[in-house]
Image (cartoon, rainbow, N blue to C red; front, side):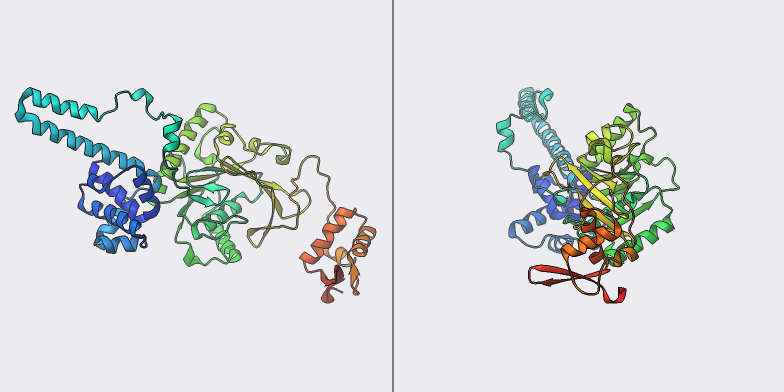
Amino acid sequence: MTADNHEKALAGGLLFRPQECLAELQGAGLTGGAFINHDCKAVFETATRLAAEGAPLNTASLKLASGLSQATVEALLEVGCLAGEARYYASKITEAQAFRRAVKMVTDAKGTGLEGLRLALEKIMQTLPTDQSGAGALTASDWLGEPDAPEYPIAAGLIDAGDRVSIVGQSKARKSFFAMQLAVSISTGTPFLPYEIERKRVLMVNGEIRPEPYKKRLRRMIEALQVGTDQLNGLIVVNSCDTENQTLEDVLLLAKKHHAEVVILDPFYLMLGDEIQQAEVKSVVRVMKRFAASGITLVSVFHAAKGRMGDKQVIDRISGSGVFARDATTIISLVEHASEADHTVMQCVTRNHPPQDAVTLAFADGAFSVADDIAAVEKTSQTKAVRAISIEDLAACFRTEPTSYGDTVAAIRQRLGVGRDRAKDEVARAVREGVAHAEQAGRTTLYSIRTDMA
């Protein structure tokens, strides 16, 4: 790629994500004088000026303030880089500028004889590093003296830009629904379960489900989440269940082509041959790291290792090589609830954020929601089988006249033959599912059967 093309890539990145891209370029120390392409220089200098003035910084304002035509803007966007790549292209432009300066110094010294040429070369040599063996090494004092890089959260407290995220669950744990809901939330900027979301452009790779059933799932899900189809212009879906030999490199190229900032791979095992072979796995992990180098957050869906998931630590639940677990920035585990049907326990382990409590999720109408009233208890090999209680049997435990909480719990224990904790859970379930009515009488809560259930 020529220096001019590097400039176009940066200008396109500025037009696409001006605030994030400009922060990276300013951190790299790039100035307007480094550009030789007039249009690219105009974009950079305009973005810098608008940011300094506190003016709105977006594609429309940059186009207007820099005086670029629509055709030029579209051409720059087509080759634009992501914010994470901005420093790479900035370094290439800086190198090209240094090279042009060196050539000019040598050219200007040609008429001054050997001594003039020698002095010119000395000046050039002074700008070059003297020892490449220490590249990237800094003293702690110098390092801490540098300003901190800006943070780019995607899911607050869970996922940051550039992270490698693993979602793991057993067969039929609705991992694909979970991944699809995450894709919808990030691409629309709507909350994902308990997490606030920063809107990003998402590439969703569906490798297992046929396109038509997948489309029906998506339609049902956005109806449950109350998201309109017009809000999904930031979600690109790749249906590759019939595609052979698709590689991570292919996906990375697709992500760059569509300017995706988040890629979700469902499932990940289709991206590699043998998930046990360490050499092959390490080769794949090296490609995974190229996503982060390109400023792309990679979310991968894994099957769980054999055995009961709840018996294992979260980091040991991913099938195949343990490299995937050790490499991940965040692991999201989905395990069957110990007692509640259609409920899942979500447990998250993340390197860059404080520990989090497990959360119970309910699945209904094609989407997950947080079930705050149900304790997050994972099903394990030690979990006792819980007898299912029908709605009809539960309704028969309530009276038409209001009854105190203690008497209601006692009635359920006696009639259904369950323990106190289970009886309390059934009281909450009856209210939640509309079987019983709860009313406040001073400091006491009274329970009665709903009139149309009597």
